[in-house]
Every structure is written in structure tokens, then in C-alpha cells.
Image 1 (tube, rainbow, N blue to C red):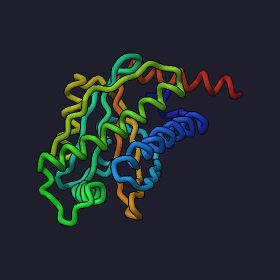
Image 2: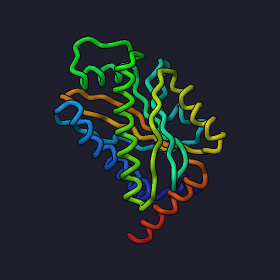
Image 3: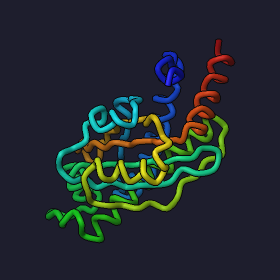
Image 4: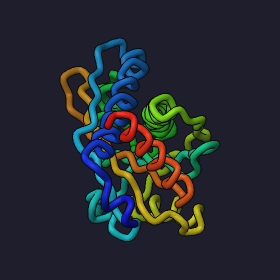
Length: 208
């Protein structure tokens, strides 16, 4: 716990930069979906104790579309991507080009959100791996329409409650002049979290 509380400005900056690079790179793949320029960025990066994540992340009191993916290899945990109902609807309409929205649980809508979420997670993990010289991969995505708490708790339960902290990335997408927001949560087991921080500490030493 102390290690996270005492993260230096460089370490926070490094994690935010990794997020910006990863989420920024997702714009290339997203642009191909809509045949239009897409801009993506991380507007905030936060850490929190597992029990405080719902408040820190501002979990919606309405159902969301959440996609879960397992993080494997050098780091172990989960990455979750959340889109509120409004954001999911805007994302679907913007990417599909349709004028009328579908039911959020429609298979076509779920498939599109799942694909977008997988792109975001994959590009983030790829950037993290390159930046810190790690071998990391993610599982196939699973999308569900449920309350944020329920989706989050499912991931925590799958990890047998061994994750103490979560990293939260608040992302913003500009697609066809429309702003859409999403949340990306990364949960790592204690050993993986320590490994991640050690890698960043090594970067700090090399830059000091």
C-alpha cells in the first residue's frame, strides 16, 4: 500500500503517458471502423483501494455496457472497459452510421461495443508491454449489460479478492466531432503490481 501512496510524480506521469500512448494508438484502429478521423486521449489517471473504486470511478447508478478481459503472462489480472448507456448509444450511432438507436442488449450493438473495448484494451496492454519491456497478452473479450458494481465485483471475485488496488483511466473519444467518454480499469494481483512498480522504478533510476 505504501508503495502506491508514495508514487513519485515521474511514476504517475509514466503511467499516464503509457495510457495516452495506448489509448491514442487505438484511434488508428477505430478510424478504420468509421472511415473517419478519430482522436482519443486519457483525461485522468487515478489509483484507488478496491473498496473505494466505485466512488473514485463514479460508477453509474444505471446499467452500463462493460467488457471484461483477462491480463496474462508477465502480469496477471483483469482489464475492464465501461461505457454508460448514453455513451454506448452515442458510440453505436456514430460508428454504425445508423440514425436510430438499437436496444443496448441487441447482439449487433453488443458486438460493436465489445470490439471497441477490445481495441482499447489491446492497444493499452501493447503499449504497456513495449514501454516496460514486458510480455503481456489479454484474453478474448466478454461484454455484458449490467450495473458497474456487479461487473467490477465479478472481476474481483474471479481474482479471489487478491487485488488490493485498481488503476483507473478516464478516456475521451472524439469521433465525427462527437465526444464520447469511457472508463478503463486495470486490476492486478499483488505480485504483478509490485513487478509493474519495480519496472517503473527502474525507469526512474535510469532517468535520475
